[in-house]
Length: 528
Image 1 (tube, rainbow, N blue to C red):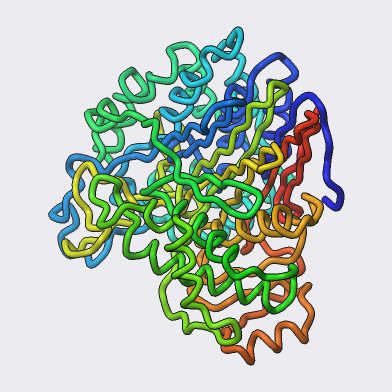
Image 2: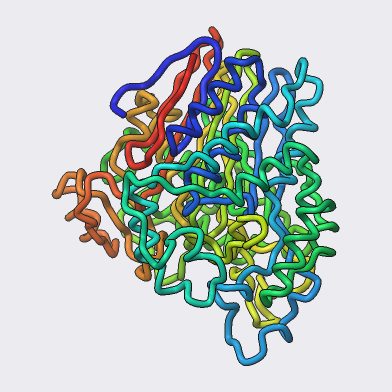
């Protein structure tokens, strides 16, 4: 996309065009922003199966005019049997297969919690209406995207110990090519069951028992008892003040704190303009400071070593900014966190806004696709450590570290911005680029999303922790960054999937909605 899209009545943005249209159509049928998001969340779990699933986790930020934003934590907890003794002979938790599927899937409980939040927003649409598009997509067939075909081929060698993966995503051992049709009849039946019995059935009904029993039989520590005990939670969002706006994100176990710190530090640097050396160097060095805080603090919210909000005061952000050398890069050997995820945004005709993210962690998660329900289970629990002294030490009932973090902004002039991206380690970095370009330097919204991006660290399976750049940057600027000590890697692509699939919506005080989708994705903005 090259131009910002505008609408008056409602708008939806998603990294897959079919999900965006599903959300838009719910708005047109009189649904609110939350209902549209639930419908689109079910849809994108169907049409973008390598990126997310109903067997994953989710997080919400919900804005209602005149009220403080509401946050929902739908992060699954480690199973009761998920102890270090469950992994004898292992130095780390396996990345694929049943032993990687060790946390409950929270996203569907998050859908229900969000619908509860929106219960007073007019006459609700039936759940069957919200899930109908996804049911049709799963039964009639989805069209395989280039990224799904490529990632299926790239990751297939990791899935030999992942029951159900090849039956679901590479029948007969053959990877479906881009543009081919792929049906998911068992998943369609599961979605139909949810439409009939309600979303709680995923945890405390027939589906919950069937999934828990099958996971246990396959060798996962998860049981039906673990699913029955799970609940999503309303939580207080983190926030900080910038020049001209207040920004919001999710608290731990997400890295939302890092997203806020990056922008908070950068705002202290008083960079004069975007895109030059000061801009890129400033954001990259702000990222390093933020990630150092994140890596020693962010974990299960019940065992935080410090309070996250103490790092979001003006004084603390200024002290972190003072550590930055404006001309020389801080060495950066720290490891990074991968992740595969989708972010979606919605604004309805009443001015309600949603920023939502849903994930299975790595592409295809654990790779385990349950035979009886068609649910692909996440591997988010592999971010736990088997070292009992580690910050992310595995214990039953604990929440794993999450790269997921949807973002929201309230501008002083009345604008409301919903924005975010997928991309693991790159999520807070891309958020900082998009917000700063639009919110601090007044670039058009679509330009802020389309503009060339960089990534410090690794994502999408990369093993290097270099500072990666798309190919559209000025070579002289790249040379200057190298001279400053940045370990630069030039990707050679103008629009790289490595940089994530971002999107943004802005509601202006006059009621006009602006929307931007990422040309790196298969998505679009859909308004009416």
